[in-house]
Amino acid sequence: MAKVFRTTLFVSADLAKAEGARAAFDSAAGRLGMPWRGVTVAPAAFAGVEVIVPLDGSAPDGWTGRVEKWAAGDTGAAAAGLIARLLGGSDEELPPKPASPPPPAPPKKVHTVKLSRETAGRKGKGVTVVSELPLGEDALKELATQLKNKCGTGGTAKDGRIEIQGDHRDKLAQELEKLGYKVKRSGG
Image (cartoon, rainbow, N blue to C red; front, side, top):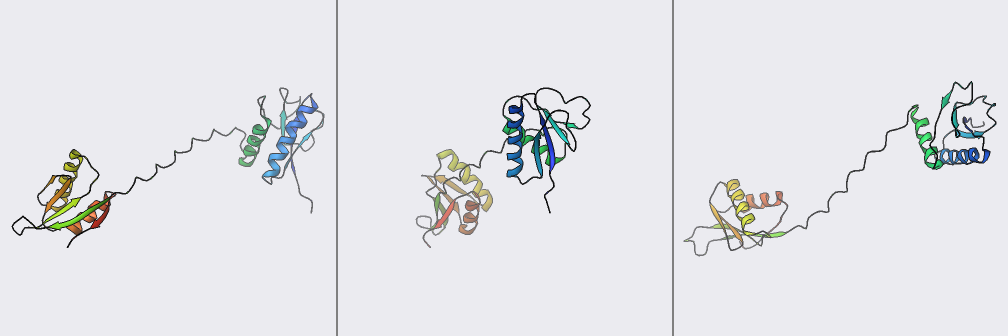
């Protein structure tokens, strides 16, 4: 069974111009496997034509079908646009594509922090120590406050480390992982 094609007519007083537009259209339709083909004929022959593309102005007198107007310039892009409109069945040009979202930021380097428990020099009272944090003094104090609140206990930030009163290694490990740190337990 022969393939049935739908026809788009390219009309111009300059036959070379019409042939160039038809070739661009046929190429675009062929790449997409569309049942459309372009033809160029004398303006008087319109039998079976559904869409006309007058390259020199307006459609021929008496034409009542669909008219596709192209701006001068890139016939390849105009042909691809016509194919898109034919696929969508719309008589209007498609709105421009929205800008694609920016690519996601590369993941931050995961910092490994040490988590340990110390009792030395504290009269038997233990503290949980978070060390090797890549933070300045102010950020360290802010993180210490946040962790103390999560554990419901006291503590301090000094000498580049955070000390939380009591044994809260599990809770602190969980909270630090939520904040994006890799936790390495050290000691007992």
